[in-house]
Image (cartoon, rainbow, N blue to C red; front, side, top):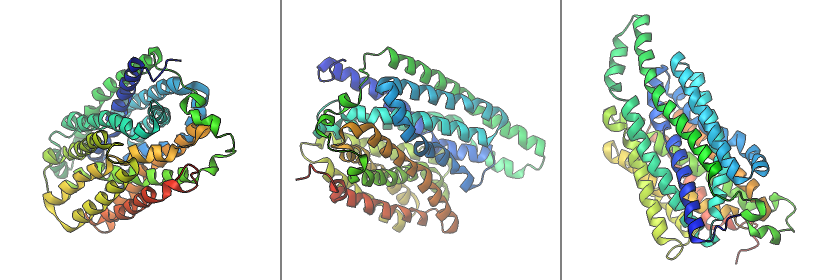
Length: 423
């Protein structure tokens, strides 16, 4: 196989994997725009609208473990290509969904995209981890995070401009229409806005799948993914690594709060009567804060701050900002929700390598358990939505406080539970 430690191969590998992070970042962060769009087009309640995040993220829980078995058969490289192809299938389902304005079809397409991403991320994340020394793994994942979140910033700027243009007057118009046929016609025309973007997305995903197959990326195997395999022959079961499962819980909670911050902020702006033409860009502000955090991670880790200490700082910052969200109001409170992106920026880059260290031959399976934790993005936003219905959209952010407290525990102690390499 190609030597990932040579300069040319190393940077080529980082570039290609960076393209993958851009693609699934773009797809993932479309949900913030899809929620208000589908809420109008399919005439949904608030709770029904948050099934968008549920359908998308629950697929990680369903597919993460099967993904590890798939990758055992295909290897990392073919697994990446397969994941992209499955995502393309999910994208094309949006076409009949729009034509029939069928919410179930939309949710099916979102689920399929999540299935593809589960396969893709199970392969990509450990791939990035092993491209270089373990101590700099968080820095490499931070570089990938910049590509991921740059895509996330651009996706609402592009898709929201197409889908949510003039949505406020349209909603006002719909409230005055009593003729069912006229109402159906207007909503059908609205639903058609989504067709062309998803046709383009399908084509891009299929082309990238073919490019990955033809690329010089090495098709790594378990022992190549982590040389520690040969030193871990005494580990008969993955359960001998309890810190892995504590890390999966941390991923669950981290993804949950990240999705809440990114996908509820548009509706939170509406809670303070902010016009949709302004609120539709709030998700991009959240992700811009995350990108800023990734740059800090690249500059500071591991020379000036370890990934463990970075995670502690991020968890504490999340607690402080959430308190600010709850204690302020209006634009100030919305901006503080956006600033949570900074607190979230280094959580994934730190939690993932901290949870995978020392797994050796269990690396793929361990990565699959961590990917299962992404289901937090399915569950916690629904709980947020329920709390918002019973209290209000501001008080519902209380759910984030225990999440940050657990992540702080993992940063201080949890990542060392059962780890033989601890000092």
